[in-house]
Length: 128
Image (tube, rainbow, N blue to C red; front, top):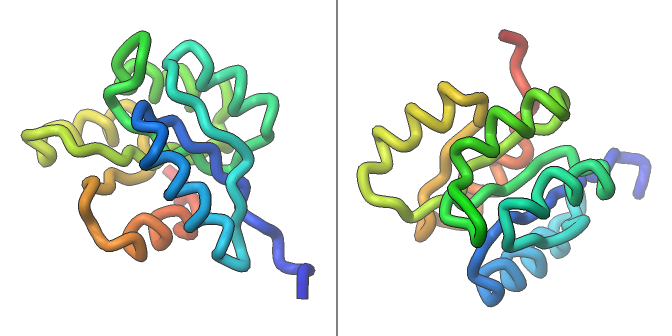
């Protein structure tokens, strides 16, 4: 039954192997599909617009710049886009708070069970 709306997921990750695996795993889920992959900070917003992504998985250490400033830029330019930060940075509590302050919907640590990431992708935006 394809009547359920599929969640369009864009991956912004600087490690191509990880990005490829994430894309394959997302595409195995019946209610979501990967609409693209980028590794450079400058490509994120144009690709998000072009792909009409619903959700962005954002690594904070992209080529060409940090992902933190991108969060505000993305949520301002595309208010319906949910940004899920997916990072392996140290001080994750502090980074998580900063990411959420800038507009990220969630922060998921690399190395977690993939189901935690999928749950974050499926969680609808909440009204502020």
